[in-house]
Length: 121
Image 1: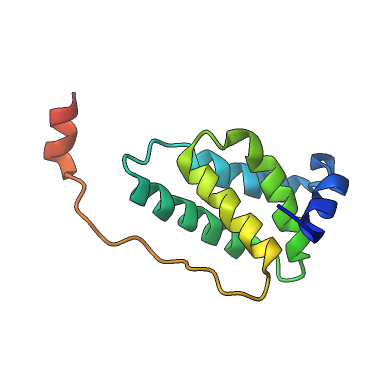
Image 2: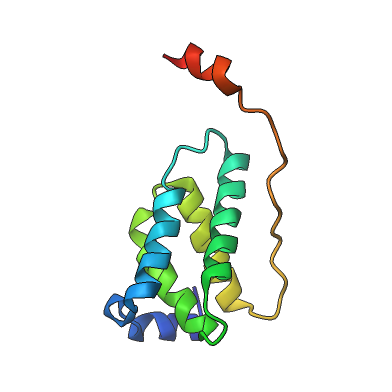
């Protein structure tokens, strides 16, 4: 990241997270730590995680500060592709705050149901 975001990352520490904010970010990261199965699914999950995190922010929250805190909290877990997508969306939103992000809900698809679960054992 460059510019203003770099300066912000230098001065914001994880200890600045409120207990509620930390739980919100931790829940999102935990849900994203899965094997997506494909790069497309990783993008879908990362976008859903970003939308979940964004929707959980209080209306009075300072978006940039919260985004930086979430980015720093998720940074150690970027070996998971969905978490990496989540971090990329956070970075993109901080670097270019007035540009719309390309977010989409996943395409509905069957995942196999009970028959598929029985075959996996």
